Amino acid sequence: MSYIEEDFLNRKNQEFNSNQKEMTESEKSNAINFLKSKNLLKEIKNDLETLGYVGENANKILLYLCGTSRKQKKPLNILIRSQSSSGKSFLIDTICSLMPEEEVHAITSLSPQALYYMPEDGLKHKFIAIDEKHGADEAEYPIRSLQSGGKLSRAVPIKNPSTNLTETKYVTKEGPISYVDGSTDTSANPENANRCFEIYLDESDIQTKAVQNEQKKAYALESLSLDEIKSAIRTKHKNAQRLLKSIKVIIPYVYLIDFPCEWIRNRRDHDRFLSLISCITFLHQYQRETKFHGGDNSPLSPIPYIEATLYDYETAYKIASVVLFNTFRELEKPLFDFYLKLQDMTKELASENNIEPEEFWFTRKTIRENLKFEDYLLKKYMMQLKDLEYFVVKNSGNGSKDQYKLASTVNKEVMLKGLTTPEELRYKLNAKDITKKEEADLQ
View 1 (cartoon, helix red, strand yellow):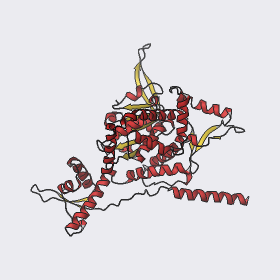
View 2 (cartoon, helix red, strand yellow; view 1 turned 30 degrees about the horizontal axis):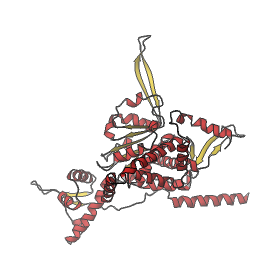
View 3 (cartoon, one colour; view 1 turned 60 degrees about the vertical axis):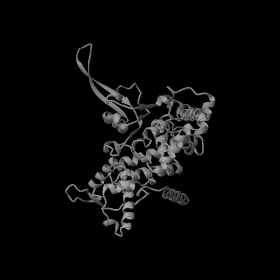
View 4 (cartoon, one colour; view 1 turned 180 degrees about the vertical axis):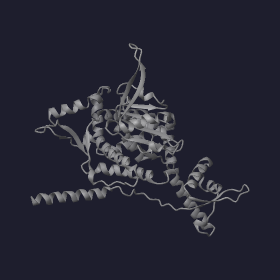
C-alpha cells in the first residue's frame, strides 16, 4: 500500500478515532493478533463461553456480528424472542461488554422523543441494545426510521426570541445504528420483524443443564482467577473493535446468489443476508487484501475495498439458513417445536391404545402430564394452534373439557429452500472460471 493510499484510509477513518480510548503498544499488538487469527470466529465463541455464555453458538456469533456491523453503512438488527429466564439479557449484556463503551448505548427504557435529543453524532455508527423491548415500545417509530433510512428527521415549532414568531426548526440525527432488543413476546410487530433477524434461544433441557453447570463455576475454586481472565478478554475485544476501519466490502459472486422470493418481505431479507456476508468480511479485514478502485490514470479518487470470500459465504449461510428458516415458516419456532412434541406424544399414546395417531383425542391435562408444560404457556400455544387450524376441537358441552386431535402433520425440516448453498456457489464459481478461460483462449 502506498503512502497516499494509507493516508487516504486514515483520513476516511478519522470519524471513528476521535473519541477512542488510547491503547498501549502491547494492547494494540494483542488486538491486531486477535483480528489476524485464522480461527477468529472460533476464538470469539470460546471467549464468550469463558465469559459465561455457553451454547447458542450461531446466536451469539450473529449478535457479535450485529454489534460489529455498527461501523458499516448497512448494519444488522436483531430481535431476540424467548421465554423469561432463557438468557436474553445475559446474551445482550455479554456482547455489549465486548464493544467499546463509547460506541454502545445499552438502554433499559427509551421514551418516544429521547433519540431526537441525543448529542451530535450520538447515534452515528453506534450499537443500540434494548434489554427488554417493552421498555422501548413508544420509541418504535424512530428506531424503525434509523434502521431503514439511517437517520432521524423531525420538524418542531420553536418561538424565535428576536421576532417573537413561531418558526419550524428541523432536528436531524444521523445514523446508521446496529440494534438488538429482547422480548418474551414471540409475536413481533411485522413492521419491526421485517427489518431484523429474529432469533430464538435454546430452551431445551440440555441447554438448561449446560447453563446450570456454568453457574456452578462462580462458586468453585476456579472462580478466583476468572475475573482477571474475563477482564483481559473484554479489553482485547474492545481494542480490536476500535481498530476495525471503515472500508467498503465487495461481494464478487453476488450475482451468483439465489434467494427465496415468494414473499414481499424477502426483498429486505435478501438485503439483510448480503449485509451479513459483508459484516463477516468486514470483521476479517486484517486477513483480507485491501484493493483500490480508481486512482492512477482514472479520474476517480482511489476507493479502498476488500472482497468477500467463499468462507464468508459459508459462514453466513450456516447462520442465516437456520434463522431465516425459522422466520419463513408459518409457525414461529417455539410453536413449531411445541407441535413437534405434540406429534411425538400423540404417536406414542395412540400406539399404546392401538389406534391411529390421527384418531387420538387428548386434553390439555394430557399434555401437561406428558410434556410437563406450564399451564399459562400451554394455553397460549393451544389458542394459537387452534386459530391456525392445526387442531380439530371437540366440545361436549355441559362444562366438559375440550378435546383435541391433530389436524396437520409438520416435518422437521432443516434446510431453507431457494437459498444457494455453499456447494452450489462453489460449483458456479468454478464454472464461471472455466468459461472465462475458454473465452480468453478464443481471443
